[in-house]
Image (tube, rainbow, N blue to C red):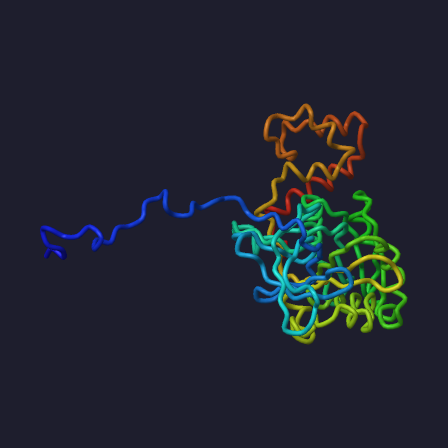
Length: 336
């Protein structure tokens, strides 16, 4: 049915404005050049706790960032209320370029990549020598993720009073990884923290390890309660003690300059996102030998040039064995 008669007054007819009369959309985003710089300390249900100068500020991600998410360790730009007072909320408008990224997948069949920590200098892999037994495959996977993400590894072995570290040290000796051996008594009296702290000075270190190895106990010793309080209401955001199992948390070190990032305990460390060709970069003594490798060489096949390179005496055979053991972790489960 016609709404208007044959001789209608044009002023009575509603017309949709043309494109020229509407405000055009733009892909240009505000630069926020006056935004303050901050560091993400923890993330919980869309709220991010950030350190801005000496203030702990609660923030949320700006819509203009789209699906790009900020993680613990990220350097970000914030606008809004940066006072850090109760019930205030700032806005993260920019995530700065990352210098390193620790990533993992739930398992090797999961294509969804999870960024655990950004901008860490070092990955401390904490493993018990007994109770629970060491899991070399899990350690290997953490090493691969560290090498791929641009982090230097540090091996921390706990509970040396229950078992000697010799076997594990022999397994990783060819990798020249720095390490610290501690006992339960040293964890209790602070001696372990002192020796670990020597490797953390001036660096941002992410701690990983599965449940029961003493990771959180060590982190608590490295960051006394007064230093935790200095980060403001972090615990109020994550829940008392809950951060040790559900979310990563960045904490300032005591006595030396640096940060530790306590991550949730892991049961597995998927490497579906890892390109095996990048792992060779962590072996600079072997990398020149790959020039004669066939295209897309896995470095663990009959035509790999590394075999002749090592046979000719250019590198230690133990290093090639270690490389191939790490590469094989993508085909093996942690329990193998």
